[in-house]
Image 1 (cartoon, rainbow over the protein chains, first blue to last red):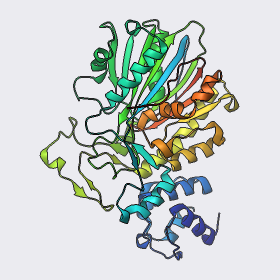
Image 2 (image 1 turned 45 degrees about the vertical axis):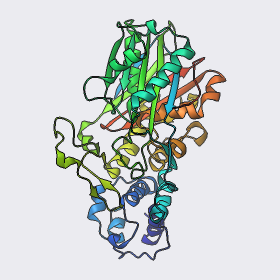
Image 3 (image 1 turned 90 degrees about the vertical axis):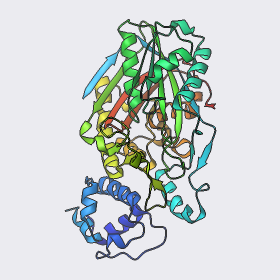
Image 4 (image 1 turned 90 degrees about the horizontal axis):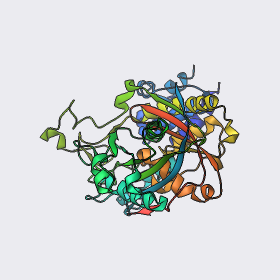
Length: 74
Length: 350
């Protein structure tokens, strides 16, 4: 499994931010301007293709921080 | 998995018609929305779409496609034993659009005509339905008219960046010894809410208040008459169910992946289509795409892709195609079809 730094790099690519953002494990997803339906699709595909892990929209709704997303890999 | 084989059915031709009006997903939206739209276009891969004007229905596009195909095939209208319309945008809720088109196309009263309600997944199902009627010996020649006017509820065609309009015609005929067609067709109604127009049928009949639009977070107005699409549910369904189905169909048919010349997938969006392609380990050159130019034309996206990308290749000699549709229902299926000396008119713009 990736460490959280690598996970965050992949997360940034998956969400496709329009402007560079500083993201830490504690960053709240709701505070990110691009945390929208498109980002959700990107993250679902990332989990599937990078980690072979199937997650649903429900998993994403329950996650409030980047750390919470990372925990879904466990 | 519902696998099946049809013998003695020949793929005779296909024609595709799109409306002439082009909408650009970035240039045509207000300036303050453009940078968000650029990000969207980058990810869904859809730059331009074809959108019907108010007066134009799916059936008008399908009529043009069928009329051209019949003329190019030099088939007499009396010979057509069945006309199957596969759409989720009929002219009326009642009666069936296929019967209206039987008369409009000048087909005989002895034509079997009916509608089938399937969307993005429709193409392999349509081939199986008409192909079965032909293989049984009930009819010798038939047409499937398939497509949608998916932009129909959108008074403002800009708010929905995915959907595009097209009508298509496919001709099948009886031919002793034609190469077998192989199918794998599946359904899962537990996911019916993933893509739904919740109002207007008998479960929730239209009431005046359903027509009242509310402004969404994206600045566009929507009412209960608009299509609801649960993106995460659709992407999970498509990327989890489609690749194993394709593998299963190949296994059932005994045909190796390398022996398929082209894989024609429903054009959903770039994220979905690329994920499916990578999971199946298919090279880009075997998986033609029309997303950028024509968007998601529902079930018609398979014929759109064949007409727009493969006409030259198909004119050059025998090709083996794997068609794969998936989406609303939920419904997903595949068909392996050998195509040789079939008629493919140029894209019709109407």
